[in-house]
Image (cartoon, rainbow, N blue to C red; front, side, top):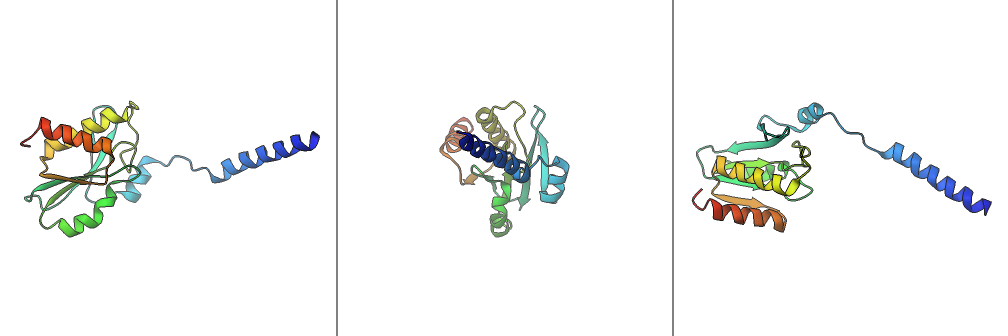
Length: 152
């Protein structure tokens, strides 16, 4: 019995030690922007205390494409596409809440916030098309917005 308790205490001590050795503390936002931002990086206030990170690149006179990343991704996913299509298209990419340099949604409500963010970008930039590795929910949001703004 004593041997079992000692083994359990040893395992618990190892878990606590591993936590402190391998944990990653939050990084300063300004440091992250300096490290991962670019000249094309822009930030727009969402009206709720967060800043949405986006890039507006490519041919400003070309048809606009809104590039939306999938889960566990960020707008840098689209950098190779910007190089390939930037001469012909205006390419707007954004970091959704909880991704890249946008950070978490202050309200904690990601579904509605994602929909409103995409809607704002769609209305402002009037993209001709969408490209993305997105989940079914994001695709459903885009389809609903296409019905709401059919000529935008």
